[in-house]
Image (spheres, rainbow, N blue to C red):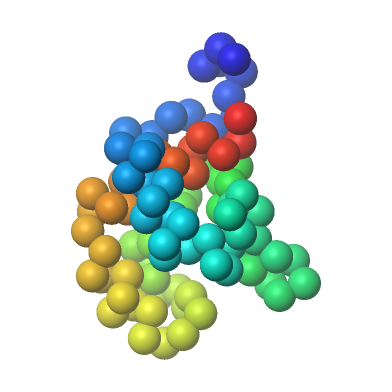
Length: 96
């Protein structure tokens, strides 16, 4: 596949580390394929623009956006920027 054929551009980060992080922290709700669960109102992450997802993570960290639990803002602040970048790099590959 040519890079021009991608819907979502690659995001700088360690894709393999992001895959591990995603599977550990996100997949149980958002699904191993990142497509969420409409019936449970769990949003799709795969195919979303990386900068949009980054903005949502920042909004969760500052409690401007509710995630799943009010305590999630503190949990998201514990994730490093490197972990988040790696997760975004991995998610950007899921729309291939």
